[in-house]
Amino acid sequence: EIILVTGVQTCALPICPVWHEACRFEHRCNHLHEALHVAEQGLLHLPRYGPLWFCALRLQECTSQKHDLMRATRTLVERGARHISKDLVWKLWFESAQVEERAGFLHKSRAAYVKSVGTCAANLRWKVWLGGARTELCHQQIETSQALLERERSRALLLRGLGGRRSR
Image (cartoon, rainbow, N blue to C red; front, side, top):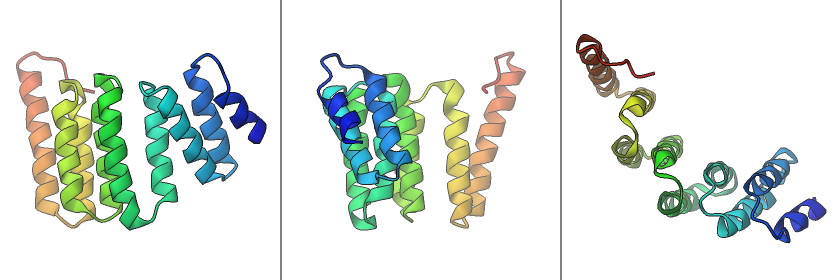
């Protein structure tokens, strides 16, 4: 364990997958705090490497108390959104929405879904709407869930009717 982490930290070349694999290794060994530390170190050296942000987000949820989790998650996501590829920012907000939902913060979860749908490609929006519908359903907001699903269904039918490609 120590040799692997030390080897990664002293590596002269910024090899992104090595940091990610070291983080995953620590996670699999159930060394969650060490895994988060490796992820944070990797992000300091390689802030543009998207998979490491998602790994850090998952580990943050595993290692933080509820009151610290939300602050840490929001900080991590805002920081990540400034560094990773624009193509991945939507997914960071999407994951954040799910963390907020699992912690019981429906309002904050909704806000993160809105940021996610606002930053994702049109062909991926259905994933965000579906995630939002599931979140609403988990919180017994059946009408809101149905409205989100209907919105996306109508959009898909409109695109199909206009000869556009269906989103996957």
